[in-house]
Amino acid sequence: MATINTNFHKLAGSYLFAEIAKRTKQFAENNPSATVMRLGIGNTTEPLPSSIIKGLSLGVQKLASVATYSGYGDEQGDARLRLALADFYKNRGITVLEQEIFISDGAKPELPNIQQIFGSNNVIAVQDPVYPVYVDSNVIAGRTGVYTNGRYKKIVYMPCTQKNGFVPMPPKEHADLIYLCSPNNPTGAVATKKQLKAFVDFAIKHKSVLIFDAAYSEFISDKTLPRSIYEIPGAQKCAIEINSFSKMAGFTGVRLGWTVIPLELVIEKTEKGEVNKLWNRRQTTMFNGASNIVQEGGLAVLSKEGQRECKKIITYYMENAKIIKKALEKLGLTVFGGENAPYIWIKTPKNMSSWEFFDKLLNETHVVGTPGSGFGPGGEGYFRLSAFGHRENIEKAVQSIQKNLKI
Image (tube, rainbow, N blue to C red; front, side, top):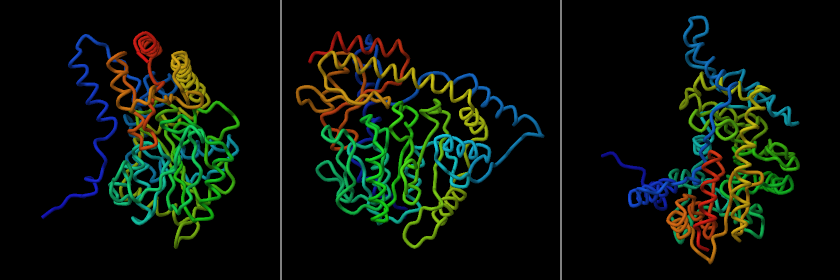
């Protein structure tokens, strides 16, 4: 008889964003005349720039000619795109070799996929609060133990609090795989070079691996803050970087990303270059590559014109963040983030729980946000709003909050 993966039963409740959708749908059905304004999920809203549309169109046109038609692409991704990404790093003073770059269909699937080259007995450490996929995917993989009192028994939680600026210190206990996200989702905090160096030093000392999620790195405007883990000396010996075109170029539905596996990265019973080969073996076995069409679009993103146009849209979203943050602070709320990341992290008023504030905000202002508790125990008492949205909708949501939220 076939059996199921019983680790799914260990997942704590429903997936965060599914629960938000459920409650929002129920509110809309009960209030058909209300206009619901969504500032919850981090989904891009602005149309792709013209240069990127041209790139995607070129990818389609190539498929219409015998001379330019392409089937399966290169195993690691289009060589031109990998070279362009190597130059992308080079322009920031970072050396990443073309053969260290693997093109993917986005960061979110790669974050669980990367676990497959590591043993099932690896101890994982996560920031708390944390993007749910880091935890949930390891639950499914069987690394976390049971869920008790808001935590998984075998996970090492690294507290992100107001006291430490929502950037944790390396764990005191042993951890094999350490997930870091900077700029952080959900708090909007960005780690400094000094803070990341502490993690690199820890990883080298303990022979751990940092899995660094840099999906929001293009939103960092402060030039003193690192946008890649490889800005830290020694990181190529201990870190894997996963990045995405989703937020930097509006590819949330287009799907394109990349993963860097340095040749210098060494784990137990491996030599230099072997981890890179393991990942290549995994990819060639289970992944046939990102769409050829989309990779043409990725090349356009990395062109000078593409970069200029993408930065303009990022500036637009960050102006949204300023509008939201300023309005909330005027109401007397304690607010974080929104300066180098598109997320605003709010301390819930009057010791309200995250879900209580979710219901209050939805019922009084018709605005949907994300309860902090959905990001882990450290998120309780906080709430996330997203700056992704059309300006007119952002302004309407802010006006409704200012007028109708009873604090």
